[in-house]
Image 1: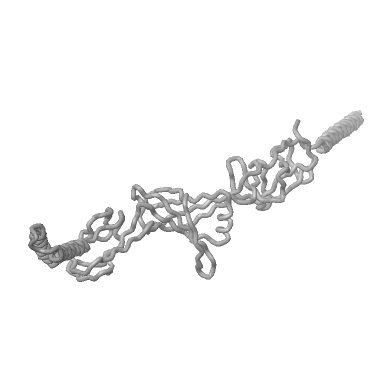
Image 2: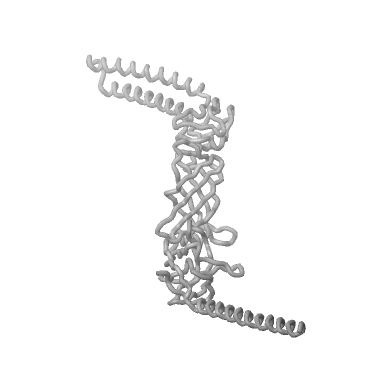
Length: 353
């Protein structure tokens, strides 16, 4: 009797297990079918059109400052340098005395000549009075008058000679070189000094020929200079260029002129140059959330008539919430920026309503 009960109990357990197994299989099958149905539905996506903007080239270069104009000071006469009032690196103003010659000899000549022409003047005046009295002829008076005028002319020539003994600065600027010493004998046109006019400053730098061609043809160009030694940024508005050869390749020397009223800039300073110029090609921008990475390559999903098309792109720069890209995408294309499920190539998609 007990044996029958055991067999009956085991049979019930087996039947119950089979029943629950069948129910579970049906439930799993139903879940799979629902999942398959769901996967067959298009993925809901949000898209955004590409943005097209002007593209700028940016170059980082190095340059140097130089004087706007360099004056070479030369002697106007011969003589011994007696007094030098400038030194190397000092600032001088236009009209400042730079040096003077020993004028003892010319001063003596001036004094003698002054006495001579004053005596000649008295003689001519005495002869004029005789002419008025009829005691002398006009011809005789003319000779005395001419003699007086000639000596007076010699007197003023000596004054001019003395004036040449004083060398004045022809400009505001900094003394770049000093070429004479006190007590030295110099002759006419000997170099005395060079002075850099720094009311304006030249900023020069070299640019490769290909870059310069794009720069020159650009509708818009900006040159910014940063002088690190005085922590000063400058916009270079006016510039000129000339072609040069460097290391076997052609380069272009660009030289800009900037105002230097405060005289902060000096010749010989190194300058960091940044050049921006408009490219003839437009720049394509996509939202950052549209760009993904696959094996170190960037890509986006392009919306292509209900299909997600995987398109590889090159990312150049970031602009706020957008990335500048290079790709085969056109300006009228749209990229997917959000989706209801994970995207994959050729996935069926529908636009969010």
